[in-house]
Image (tube, rainbow, N blue to C red; front, side, top):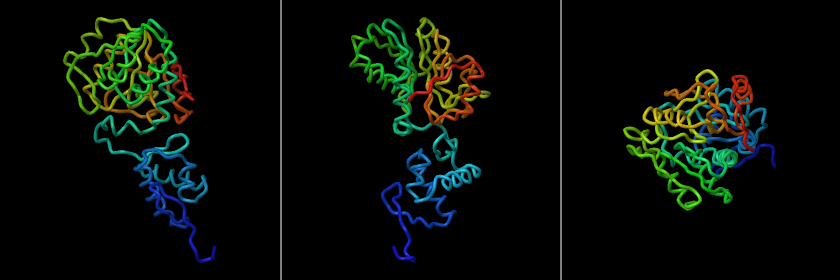
Length: 278
């Protein structure tokens, strides 16, 4: 390569990015890539921009200081203005591999003959799919307030009995909420609940971004003997609008390796059992 030529590397959309971009411009393009893909690893960003991982981390630290990205173990996510919840379809692809691992680990906690409550959400949908894959499971009764999860579980009937909680339909998450949504929950004593959320923080507790589902989630927690929160690493350390419960009310947190180790250590100090799915 001639001395005055500029080396180029692939960008997120297949275009070519010059290695010698000025730092400010490189960080802007890095932010654009994060917004497009939702989450990128340090190694991916290094390859994308032809820079060392040390430089990537420095760029991410600068963007995080400006409040434009959120650092997650191994990479980063674009910070989003808190404008309310994102539709199920938009969230489905975010951290899909991590949610698959969480779902598989959570499903291993269920035994034949048990009664399960499955909350609404993309991570709990991964739990539902993993339960279906366990063909040895029999006589499992599953209560859910998610229409999409009920449809996912339909092929497993009659191995599973699927009970859809009633209520008012929320199209953003395909969920059923009060009024009427919690009436059945008040009458059951389930073996375990798998609860989705938008934040798990040692001090802020388990939180959710929207109020309509929050009350139903609290009733789910009250209806189960074992309380399991399923949350990918991007949610650890986040605090959202509606508080569902303090962390010491949770029996088990199932998360993935992208979660901040320091925060997980603090949660363990608060007597929360933590399972990191691999």
